[in-house]
Image (cartoon, rainbow, N blue to C red; front, side, top):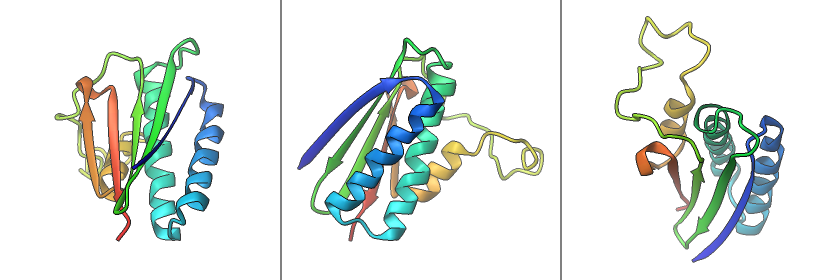
Length: 133
C-alpha cells in the first residue's frame, strides 16, 4: 500500500493542484484512460464541494486530499473543515423537478464514476474508490 497526502487552502483556483496530483497518479500507477477520466471528474467534483459547500470558500480553511494505492484499487480521501452535511437526504438531480437546476450533480457524478463512495465524519470526509482490475 502506498499513500500520498496533500492539503491546500479553500480557493477554487487550487483545483489545478488537484488536477496535477491526479495527472501524477496516472503516470506513477499507469492508470488507464477510462479510470483516469473517472477519477479526474469525481475527485475534482468532491474537492469543489469541499471548497464551496464544506469550507464555504473560507481561505483559512484547508482541504485535505490523500491517495491510497493498493494492488487492486486506488482510493482518494477528500476532507474539509466544514460542519458536514446530511448525505442521506440529497435530492435526486435526475428527478423532473431538479433537471434544470444548475447544481446538485456532484455527488450523483461521484457515485456513478467511482466503484465505491463512502461518507465519514458527518460528511466532512468522502472516500472514493476505483478498482483497477
